Length: 127
Image (cartoon, rainbow, N blue to C red; front, side, top):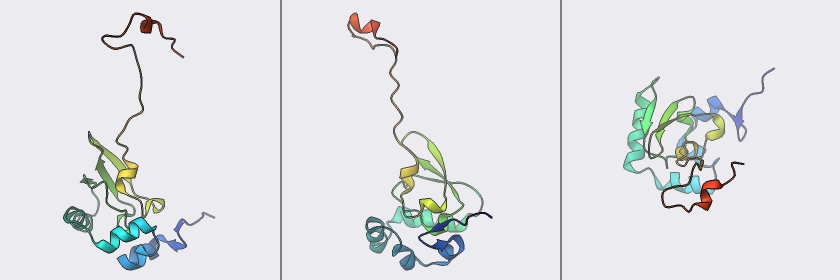
């Protein structure tokens, strides 16, 4: 028997039928305050695009958009400053920001010493 995934005691269908006020009572204070203040123009446009399109991926620069129940099951292409990163929305992501799942920094990979380095730094061990 598969375990049903819930968000704070609500199943996916119940979450999709909730209005914005009911959902805002489930998220943390930062997200609740942001939802209470209303959406800026860019977020409203993104919401309209989500409601219009059914199957295709949605490209966006709105990294500060809070993930709403309407987004469940959708795939977003979130810009990280250089490229678009594919983000598939799941129940655990509700209440977080889109930008949290499209990392904007890579892991640093050091290689050989750069220009102007001393002779001694040439022989650094490769551990």
